[in-house]
Every structure is written in C-alpha cells, then in structure tokens.
Figure 1 (cartoon, rainbow, N blue to C red):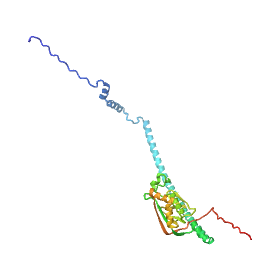
Figure 2 (cartoon, one colour):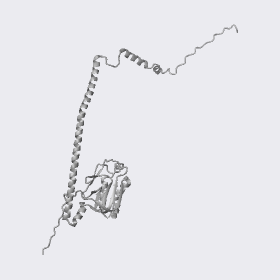
Figure 3 (cartoon, one colour):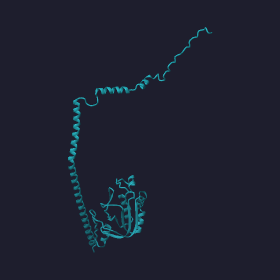
Figure 4 (cartoon, one colour):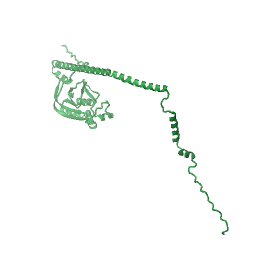
Length: 303
C-alpha cells in the first residue's frame, strides 16, 4: 500500500455567485452612474466659457441700460403728474361739498316755507268752515281731519323686533329677508290703519300725523312715510272712537289677527290699550282738487 502513488487532491475554484439584477443591466447602469456628473461637467464648461447670463456685447448692455432708464422715467413722470393733480382734485371736491351744503340749506328753507303756507291755508280753511257751514262745518272738519279732535279711543303701539337689523333691501315679506330684519313695513301700517277705520275709528293719527281720506302710507328705503313725512319706530297709532268696542272689534278683525301673526312669527312688538281721552292734531293740509259738492235743485210747486 505504501508503494502505490497517491493522486493529488482536486481543488475546485469557487465560482462567483450571479447578481439577482443581472438581467436588469440598463436600470443598474442608471442607478450606478447618476446624471450629476453630466450636469457638473456642463456647468464647468459654461463657467469656463464665461456665460453668466448677462449680455456680452456692448450693444446689448446699452439696450438694457436704456430700458431701465425709460422705466424709471415713466415712473417719475407718473408720480409728478399725480402730485400736480392732487390739489386740483381736492379743490374740486371741496367746491362740490360746498355746493351740496348750499343746495341742502336752500331745500330746507323751501320746505319750511311750504310748511308755513300749508299751515296758513289750513287755518283759513277751518275759519271758512266755521262761518259757512254752521253746525255741519264742525262735523265736516272732524271727518276731513281739518280740525283737532279729542275723545275716548284706542292707543296702539307697533315697534320693530328687538333684534331688528337695518336690511332695507325692499324685499317682500314672503322672502327670507324680512325674517332677518324684523322691521315693520309700510304695508303693515296700512293694514293697521285700515283695520282701525273698519272697526269704527272716527279719527286716526300715526306718530302725531293726522290721517285723512287723502293720506298715503308709503316706504322710502327703510323709512315709513305718512303724507311724505318720515316716521321712526315705535309707531304710535291713536284712534278716537268707542274705546272698548273699537279695541275688541279691531283685535277680532282680519287686520288685528294679521298684526298678532307678525308678533308671533317675526317678533314684532305690539301693545293696545283703551284710553279715556285722546287728542289728535289737525291735518297739516286738506286740499281737494277734483271733487265738487253736489247741489240738488228742489222744485217748488206753483199754486
């Protein structure tokens, strides 16, 4: 056994394992060699060439300077014009304000003159009724509103809701605008006054303004006008008549129920009371332009 030659052992060289991403050589190359080197090389070439983004030639530099000078000139001229025009605008505004003040003062004087003339005409009318109509003139003066009256009646106060806001968009009550404002409208006062007349009132006034057959209740924005006189809440309505009966009939009428619905649904504040003696002023002016008295001719038989 010792004489038999032994074969050298066979040593196998270990093989390198295969990469899992060997089949994705393109993606591997992109991941291993990023583009930062390329960008860095391009930036280096650009810097070496002296390309800083600014104009290189003298002509381009002069053009840029001219553009900047032109822009500065435009801004300077605009500021100078605004400074020159400012005193002129202020002077025109001051003149306009002075003109408005003068016209307002003139309108106030004319309004005072109209009120004086109306009062004079009303006094002459009342004096003429006393001398021409006898006992019937007093009744005519009461019914027409030409004379002041007093007597028992009803005092009705209508006021906006506590949380009322000044909306004033003029929307009708059916829209949501009123529920947001809670204001008394001109149509509400119209129904209140008409309901009192229908319930037996003999004379009615709103905030001291006597109503006649020619009176009109309208709206101008948020304000309620009675014969073109603006009123402010609360609205105090005085009605001369049989106090207790007048109060009951009004509250049971359709207009009284309408006012109660406003109170429950929209927060309108109302209050009604029976008064022993109410005093209503005469209407500022009672002018009839169209109606004429009808004179009946009586035929007398001959004997």
